Length: 137
Image (cartoon, rainbow, N blue to C red; front, side):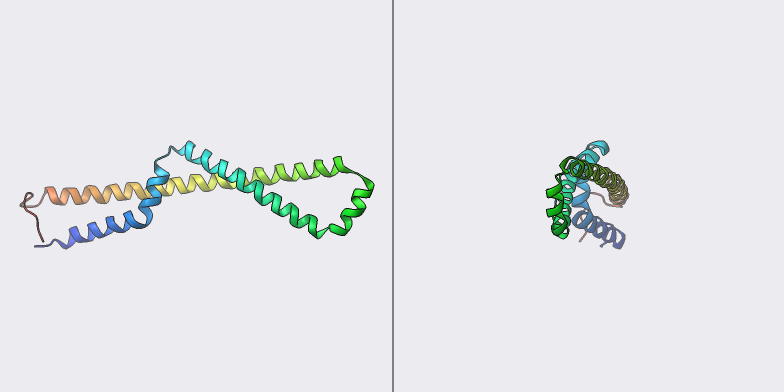
């Protein structure tokens, strides 16, 4: 006879393995600090690309004023402003990346514990069955 409780537990485990489980295994294979560092490195490169794209769009927007700027030749003041903006942008962006990585890691940790709890419950149900050596269909 088929145990409906076991079928429910197995289907829960299968759903967790197919959807969330794949990402959880990838995330949980790291330690928390390693995962956060990897995400911050990715964030550094992506943030730099985003900042460069924003700068290109902004320079396109002020193209007319740029000609008068180059005529005055205030390159150092402009470079200092750009570097300050880049620094502020990167600090904010990397902080958001780190917080997101910590939250994602904690969610994966909770999902892993839930998966292990369901697996343990399923294992106990097989151990406590009347005929553990006999397969049921």
